[in-house]
Length: 290
Ligand SMILES: N[C@@H](CCC[C@H](N)C(=O)O)C(=O)O
Image (cartoon, rainbow, N blue to C red; front, side):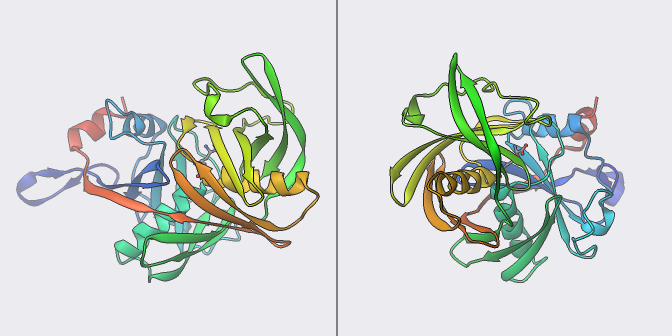
């Protein structure tokens, strides 16, 4: 299916889609098992546009890993691969909220059994557990604090930790109330530390077990939640306390998730919701690439 599919009597059917979100970080899911959909960066930008498209923070293409050229060798080629794109069309490694929505879609479409589902990503395989109540736990792999850096917002510098969760984060722990930040523009950061860009989190400690976070995502802007970001801020908070393992509840504008960091890796637990299913208009899809 390189474009819209021809059906009976010469009619043209559009491209199938599902819309979903995880703590209001929202995605267009595009089923493409054989990897034949021409998902250009222009089409991603059009799909994610909240006025001329469906509107989303990103796109999740559902494809067998064998059809993805840059799938890592650690991913089973016969398994499902989450080909994630940011709203600006950039292809990046990993999306924690996206993986929960992706696994939920696989189960709802009958492409995987409820329970344990392994999702291939550019950061490697991510085991998920999809529960009947819509809550999904994802094995997020290691969350590694790689150093210190600063973000600058409105002329003020905020110190933070660089954290690698398969994608890059700058987690800034601050006493300044996160609800009061203006995140309409990208916080400035050190491009020598983050040459490929970075997701910037601002974090308050609510109590010993709870954090509150806002995020400006690379390739998107401010979002209501970032799953990898929640893991990054818990890793940073533990690191700041000299701990290597622990659990936190993280509140984001779009909801609440649970994060656990262990010596071996990390898990993210939170909701995933499928909102709608449909078909993109064939003419719109064709025009979206121009
Ligand atoms: N919203 C995602 C992260 C998506 C990728 C990020 N914008 C990047 O460029 O690394 C999440 O839930 O983790």
